[in-house]
Image 1 (cartoon, rainbow, N blue to C red):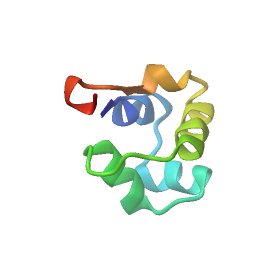
Image 2: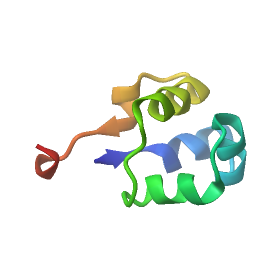
Image 3: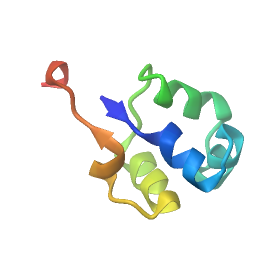
Image 4: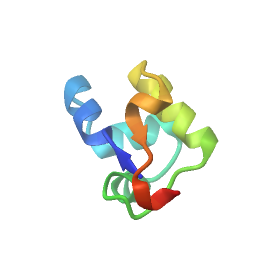
Length: 67
C-alpha cells in the first residue's frame, strides 16, 4: 500500500515524532508506515487522515499487489 504521509508531513512541517505524538504511536511506527513496511489499522489510518484534514483514500492507496 502506498501512502503520502511524508508529503503531508512536509506540508504541515511535522516531523515523524510530531505526527506520532498526535496519533498516539511511536516515531518508529510512523517511519515503518512511510516505508511501506507496516500497514496501519483502520483506526490509525483515520487518525492520520484527521491530523492532515484529508480523506483516508487521499493518503493511502492500494497497489495491484494488495489485491
